[in-house]
Image (cartoon, rainbow, N blue to C red; front, side, top):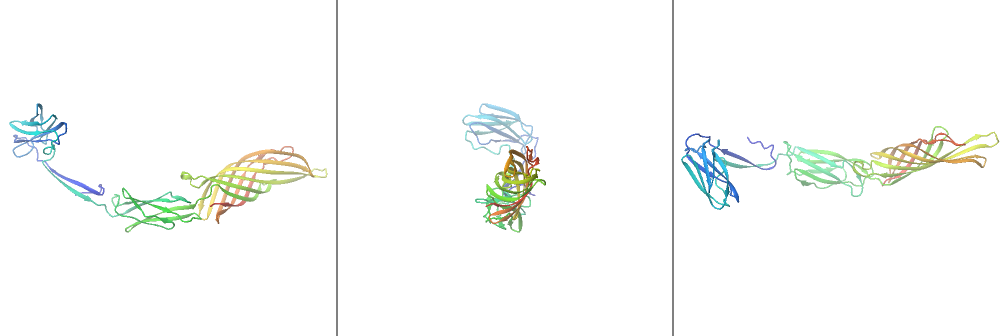
Length: 397
């Protein structure tokens, strides 16, 4: 029984060899053999056989090529061999007991007999064809594609039969639930490759890519999201409070610089936020005029922001640092009685929910800053930042 499961498609060869059982009787004859003769030297073989043609083991043999002699004992298959130099035409002589044999060799001689081989040998060619396709391995690279000019994904298909051998003579039929997929091209080892191109993409979506061969079908999913502008800009407005004296309208601007390298894709960005807010607090002095303390804060924050899209919606979260310039003036009536400026610094974080709208998105953002301030003659101590909620519109495409 021939098991071709371990063989690849193409051809294999089956050999049948017969060697007579060894003998230990009288020497009947000596067979000479050698391969093609190359310049410099040749291996000469002598086989000792009994009168019935069976190999004789343990028989003494003397081989002479020209003036060079080699002596030895035959092995279990009746063969003895030795290496000889070849200088011009040489006479080969072999002797075992009272039996002798001779031949002539020369440089370029194509060889004689079957040195060291079996007495009978048959070779049969077997043509191997792999079985039907039973397995399809389908992959898409990258698994998340940011659609934009020139963007495409590589679809790879590996076909195999029941024994796991690659199948290269069956072409898969490819389908995609959206976008355009090209015709597959064959590669060695049963692999096929095609390219998938997105149509206009305005929101994150999942595309099903399927491959079919005969009655075998498999599919995988490719996540597609719009590629955002970099940098992208979002003006926003909202309110800020530290749950104390600081309660103000907060106006600002976000600028995003997106990273587009390796596994990061468009999911990570550096966000720079600049804004301003202010408030006024009055206190009675008992002098007839109230003391009015007015503060203006100009914060600038830098944060690393991670983003995830879900259809038309997206979620963001980020952490970073903020610095702010705090300007305070104390007035009694129209007169400035004290003023000062201080630099504040502290941590900054944000969470945002976004929704696609037109060529951009609306973003609802909650921000938090901790900006500790130390008052001078007039001012505030404690956190001059706080928690803010704001609404903005970011241009994306």
